Image (cartoon, rainbow, N blue to C red; front, side, top):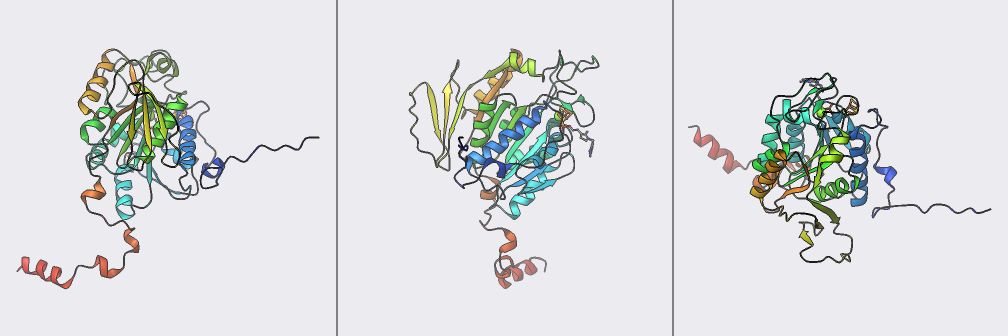
Amino acid sequence: MSTATTPRRVNRLDLEILNYRGAKSTLCAGCGHNAITERIIEAFWEMGAEPWGLMKFSGIGCSAKTPAYFMSASHGVNAVHGRAAPVATGAILANSTTPAIIVTGDGDTASIGLGHYLHMLRRNVPLVYVIEDNGVYALTKGQLSATADYGSKLKSGVINDTEPVDCCLLAIEMGATFVARSFSGDKRQLLSILKAAIAHRGLAVIDVISPCVSFNDHEGSTRSYQYMKDHDEPLHEVDFIPSFVDLDVEFEEGAATDVEMFDGSHLRLKKLDRHYDPTDALAAVRAIHESRVSHEVLTGILYLDQESPTLLDKLKMVPEPLATLPERRVRPSRAVLDQIVDEYR
Ligand SMILES: Cc1ncc(C[n+]2csc(CCOP(=O)(O)OP(=O)(O)O)c2C)c(N)n1
Ligand code: SF4
Ligand SMILES: [Mg+2]
């Protein structure tokens, strides 16, 4: 009798994907958020990140529960609704050695948390920011959120007569340095975008259309699986080659754009129907506006800026966690204290 066993699949830290999982999901079967959790797990595993070395943040909502479902060896904070951004900003300032992710909802980000979202964007806080965008407040039973499209219909028949907030447009305008849109049903694209976001040095915002099967997956909704199947318009095919993998994949000039990232990884954007330059912010804004008129949902890497300083650069933060600094490095010198006292004389 054969005793053949399946080979153990491990990453560069010799860890299996199981090490990157978390608690069992309590979300509805078929919820887009569950598919996003799976891609987050795969992305961190494939990148060989330390599964105990991530700071996870969320607010309140079905989406806000998801950090419990991945990398349970890492610390997570469930903040107040809409407040994950300021909490994460504080944590990153206190300890910039540990990477951070926020998983948020469209209500969390674009309704109650909009003010905090804008200030996080303008500061270019270095973290990965995933918006699980279903167009509704799902946890409170399906009211329209601020990202719901004009004309989208609720189950009750109510038609949205208010223009939406586009989280990607805001992100480009206000200073995020990596802006992407994807669909929870597009495994390949979402996984590549997440890995590139993890490698990015700065704020990476990914707005992921994530259908809610309980409250927003019917005919007339613009956040249903069917609507996305009919209207998803990928800008390019996204391939990500991490810095620790040999660049042996040939690419044809003109057919793809190769972008070398800060850590030596490569982002290969294979051309589809159109020419698209993700480093051109104005062109990105125009493309998003045009797609709204043509009722297309543009997906892919909308914008990439590898030059702008992050909040940590601007504040000239030290590389060590603040709590590990000895008193002599955090206490102002006698000369500085004397100068402050003199200013009040
Ligand atoms: C300060 C505050 N206001 C309102 C609520 C009620 N509330 C809980 S979740 C939620 C909306 C969640 O929607 P979203 O962020 O889109 O997440 P989803 O459930 O759709 O994933 C609201 C309004 C709350 N918990 N706290
Ligand atoms: S209510 Fe909607 S968003 Fe919440 S878990 Fe169910 S399908 Fe997902
Ligand atoms: Mg929502």
